[in-house]
View (spheres, helix red, strand yellow):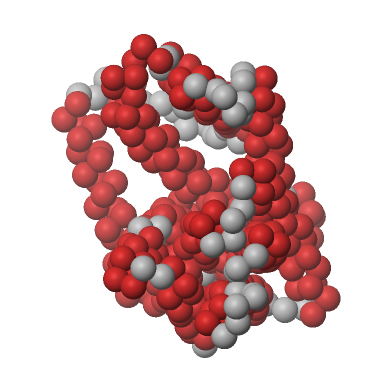
Length: 378
């Protein structure tokens, strides 16, 4: 992202190619960072002073609390970063109605740079705090390895990843089943976001100011939703599995609301106020789905294998991001009507919810514990 600072108007000839390369690179690095970020959750939960003082090996309630606070902090910081970007946009004149294309492009470029500075600053700080200060000696011979040995390492890493997938399927079938379901319903709720923006612009006649409010309301609602669903979980003493199912059924109200447009000419995402309802309801459930899915997955992974299994978890998340847009584009091109897309979203939220409900989580946790006992005996 910081490279955009040196990417001025005089490079306009190459801007599309360079911007595409930088976008791919930054998104790849972001995906890798999320893998390690997620894998820290069970480790931090086990090593917290509160858990160690009670002599517990794990506490999924504490994992829920950490996960909720983590997602809420992320959404709130995203809102703050968005507001800072808005200040940059206004001060640079990029938001002016008479702003030239070059001026607007330059303003957005500095907004991207601001995001890069934000990531770098907080990333360096927390990497320092989470740094592994183990006593392992660094092998000087390993530092002088040739490029061929680095290639061997890459092959070994790919082999281990393939082994993890195979092991999850054979030794931890419940974990593998959950990942397949996660692949499906993450495609469902991520497609809602993209389709919602299209509907807000095209069918609900939402202007630039309205879209900005939607961009603020969604993450703010997600931060609030994290704590609301955590409160409900504690009050009802519900499991992570039950909370994921509840959030999926709750978010399915949005495609159902969209399908009401077939029966009514006044509601069903036809008015601008419905765009704000979509943003708020989507945000409230999005934070809960993400948080409880992560903590449920923590229950189903073997100890000391967090990074390996969370790499698979992240793959199912990001790997489904192309399915929804592809299906919607095919449906829209064949009929010229985006409303049919709500049938697809409804299926990708309701159907996985029923299968998650039937998932034998107790059996999955038993398999993980048996694996841990075998490893400890060895």
